[in-house]
Image (tube, rainbow, N blue to C red; front, top):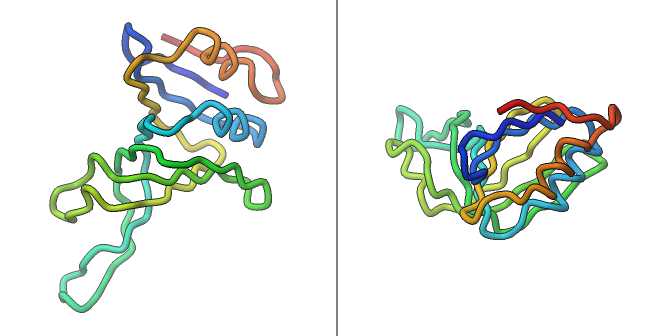
Length: 134
């Protein structure tokens, strides 16, 4: 898994899972209350009020649950949208995000990520060696 620490207090990190083991590791360490910033597909009102379009939008979810799904090779993160495009009126709505291999995501933990967890993230994957940058 690739890891990048985005702030000096280790509250915000960016990860890129490269294997199913990486997705499983994320499932073990992302917990309720963490925030995940990623792109999701969301049904939004189209040009005609009666139509809906499925559009990719970037959102930040407050995590309620996380589930590794080995049969689909993805990580399902469920939560409430805290940040998103105002024009779609998605704030406060529930959303599932499906994280797949090679998809960069930003993880935010208010109290910061411990060195132990960061080390687990870096050592995850078939290569077994750290892959990170500050």
